[in-house]
Image 1 (cartoon, rainbow, N blue to C red):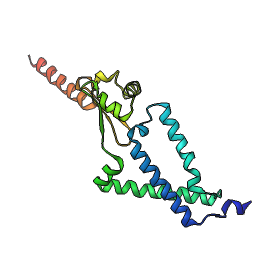
Image 2 (cartoon, rainbow, N blue to C red; image 1 turned 60 degrees about the horizontal axis):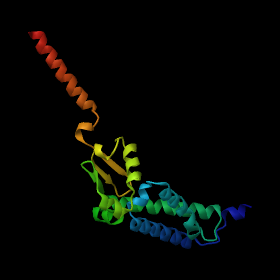
Image 3 (tube, rainbow, N blue to C red; image 1 turned 90 degrees about the vertical axis):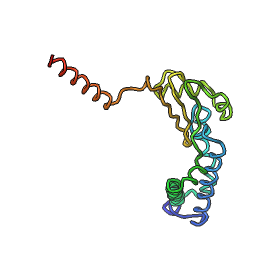
Image 4 (cartoon, one colour; image 1 turned 30 degrees about the horizontal axis):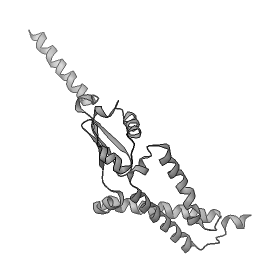
Length: 185
């Protein structure tokens, strides 16, 4: 039993190479597929992302079902990801190459139909995401952006933005000044 848990039927070098190759392959495929898949705007996107890990599992572990082999694969995945994340944060051109740039989906309260079509996004899915961002509909937005990592960022029109603590403090100070003026009269 203990032998099966820790014996490595595949060499560590092959395990590392398989893991790095799968990581890079998935990163390239996701980059080519675009931000839409990362955004998980509908249940089909979520299904693909969930199944993707199962599909590539054997490519990483091969015939190795040992605990040690799984832990080595996990360690390599985390290490490679940490290196890639740091490299992309240090080198902006690499970041743009690997992650892409933000894409404007709506501007001044109107969807960009061409961009939605190019990305394969349905207006209904994006409208639901807009509501999750705190807007009633796209008409409330100054701009809606799909970020490289798949996050939707909704910028409300200025008149619809909630008051900040600073706004309230400034309003309070103005009221206090008015009260003082009135008291002097």
